[in-house]
Length: 71
Image 1: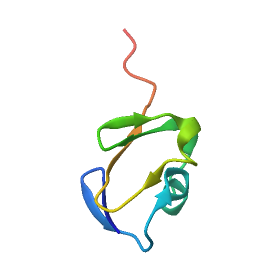
Image 2: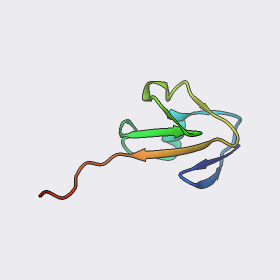
Image 3: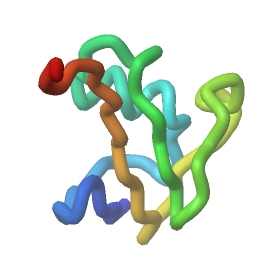
Image 4: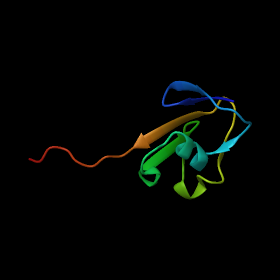
């Protein structure tokens, strides 16, 4: 299966995979701190196990960080 993650083409074996499993495969640290956009739609974290990725899907892993400059 061919997918795109953060603008990069990737090839995965298999027909479909859950978002949660993909986060594990990609060794995403702190997956609870990552939002996933699948084909332009944000997926609720409670749906990561039940939402499957299929051929030609496009994903964005969105990492939110705190911080900034104090004024």
